Amino acid sequence: MADTLLVRALKGKPKTLNLCNKKLDKVPRAIGKLDCVVHLQLRGNKLKDLPIELSHLFQLQILNCGNNELEDLPEVLEYLTMLEKLHLFNNNIKNLNPKVLTHLRNLTFLNINNNQLKTFPPEICRLSSLQHLSCTNNQLTELPVEMCALIRLEEFHVAGNQLTSLPLEFGFLVNLEKLYLQKNKIRELPESLGKCYKLRTLDIAANELRIFPTELASLPLKELFCEANPLLQHIPVHSVQEEEVLSLKEMTARYVMKELKDRWSYLRKAIRHYPQIKDMLAQASKCAVCGESFLNTWLECVRFVDAQGDLKLNNLNGLVPVRALLCSYKCFNSAGHDYYGVAFP
Image 1 (cartoon, rainbow, N blue to C red):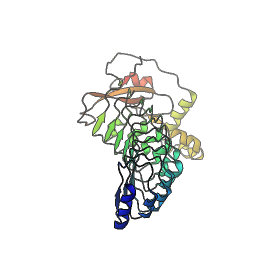
Image 2 (cartoon, rainbow, N blue to C red):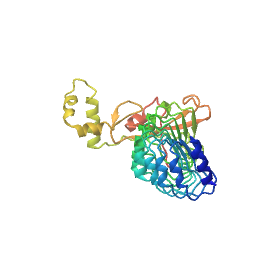
Image 3 (cartoon, rainbow, N blue to C red):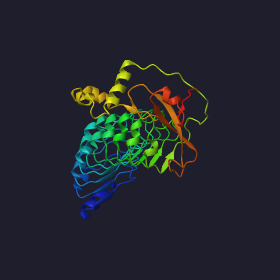
Image 4 (cartoon, rainbow, N blue to C red):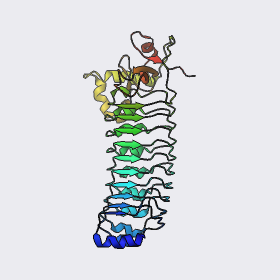
């Protein structure tokens, strides 16, 4: 039946070819003669690989191989350099061939839902045009830091996996608008998430999250889904803590950072000759109470913000716990702020 369709297609030079649900275990080699095809549908067959003849479809932009029996990215895909949309959902894919990823630089849409992926190779960053990535219901335990180089990514679906965290560099995804993380095992979101200035939808439901990053309120969120998480509850208990003893490194770092605010300070000129120290101080944070900088010693607190009043969310009611970092117990014990210490069970 597929051969008959191809013979007919050869006469008409179609832009679209539909071979869905034909019970194919192999794609007829004659398909290589249809170099006019832009959109190829192979969904719902029994394919375990794709023939090399597919490489002649140099105009192909959309390929749907969903609901087949693929176990890896077919190597022939590396020749389809014009490919923009690739559907690979409901297969048995365990690995993404790095060699193939390197050549798919025009790909904007990738759907690999319902496969058996445990990780992405570092070469995932070669998908430099990718805007939509969906890998729901796989077996992912971590995401490589290289994924954060996908700066054109707008929508990321990674629900139903086994993630416990996101890369610290996640904030480099500055064009991300929708992020779906539900049904994982995520315990903490990176502070850099606050750099995703276009993020409008965040679904972190059914994870192990207790508190949100400090910059949550700065995001332009329209939808936040966080049910079925062990979020911190607003149950205040009075507590006064004694002042801690800082390390010599921490005291020195705080002194230097304070001096750097003075435009006439000698340290401001001298630090140019110590790039390693300059890079280290660049990782500093600011106290939520006094505004002074600190390096490695801080007190993790929580502030409860109103979902509708402060975050302007229409889909969520009540208080949302947001992390706050304080430089000392002195600031924590001071009056006039709404930060609470975190009590661990």
